[in-house]
Length: 361
Image (cartoon, rainbow, N blue to C red; front, side, top):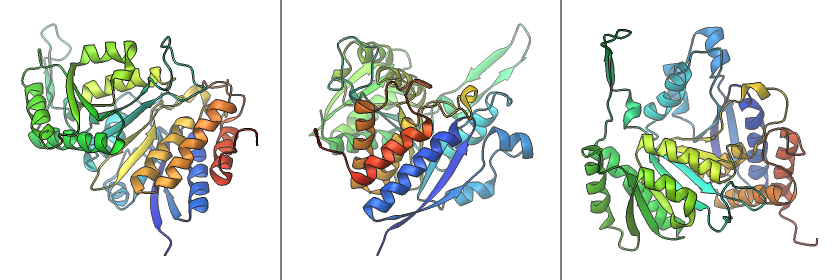
């Protein structure tokens, strides 16, 4: 019997619909090639929908999304909407309501892509960040007193529960074991200053580590992590960290792997529905121009397929992306690829369908 999956698609704002179209194209090709079925349902969430209807994200939509096997997101962000409304009302709400407690960010440099790091290449830049995605400073706990006055006080609290911290750490250990590369897991924190939160993180980390004797462990302050990601990225295999630090170091990771145009990530609920997206924003100035790079969105479909268990299809997508980066496009930057957005999608879909040609073929 043919396997069938329900995929919820949120094209979103700006260039989101353009890159999502190419991701869907590649997904359809992979399904046809590897013998499974995908059923797509579009949801018009984002700035335009909000400005037109006043609705950000309804309870009914949340209920519908919970029934999907995976969510494919383009981008959220509209310059006509006040910052924070869409980000909190859609992105954070989806993560919290769907309990997507892991943000998974591969940091991988492919051949043919330039990195700003001198003398570093694909062999040195290949690690994964596991970021706690549902607690920390992003819960919104805190408040303001005497706002707008000289006596204003603003408090933002980082919420860390033993359950939330431990399940993130355990996921990271399992992922490190499955990845089977360096088999080393690094805890990134700030134990010398954030003595309450990261005391909890550190105790949980080493308690769980006892169950994984095959995984080497170490610790690095977040500032040192940033330094070593630039100086010696090859030191890292898998990094686990909290919500805020993970948000920061993954953007650094995107830069050293070649930029936002190539970086993809997943918001994972191992027991529920997960959401996959390109890391770059909506890039509204490029909307409709067909110049934006869709490879980050296409790489997000690779993560989506892996999570669904379609490993062969996922591997073919990654191999196709690597082929395009090495041999076809000139640059990963918008407008400098040598192909349109849809043209790059066609290249990847062609390799997914027909396979990667042998050298000299």
